[in-house]
Image (tube, rainbow, N blue to C red; front, side, top):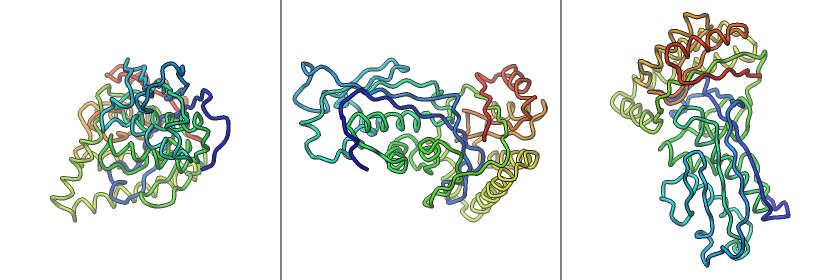
Length: 329
């Protein structure tokens, strides 16, 4: 990290959403997972100084958070301890290379907006906090590496998800397909041939923190059994990486179907997710599965490009709140 000069000028940053292709839940237990950014949805943060006349005696009282999509505007000093945006601000301020930041920084507002549905498994929390950290870092005149940003955002993910794997903050901050194993060096996922994915949103909030906790309870009740299940998920993720690198879409689709079946045994699917998965497959998808924490949120379908709109329409017909077509390359 280094100072980059001209601090306290208005700054803006954006971050894309993401989907997990393989490895949900098992990734928490040391198995690999694959995830890719979704540029069609983004979070944006803008940091700008307020008038000196508005400056209070305490720095935190002069920092305003504007969550425009939630129609909320509040002071940092009034934020709850488990507010991830407040945590993102405080963690970034702590990186300022001088203890004089309360005296030198003007009061400012951090305004956030996002097209990423909340609680959908598309990485809304990680994207919003990534945009916030980057915009605030630029406002303070800091140069934060992607690894440093990812580390800060990971701390905010703990407030959202309890025991996060770290995959959301990794793929969002590095903005590229990743092969992720908790605690290991991140690897960029090489895509042998572009492939198309349709994302279908159930419209039901996915409470990742709850589903992660439920899977942990299952694991604690029968560790040998669930370790075997997680091993199977990890094996699918490794085979999926090879399929992606070789451009073998048909085999990748088969692996998606197998991964979904294992997620069903973890009790993290739902009737809505299963219905969308079934419709996608019956309409010609090469494979389909839930994506993310489950119990709601999104499913993904691997499709031939010429079938993408047809499958997206079919998903909306049977209840998908929204669909996104994205190409991974």
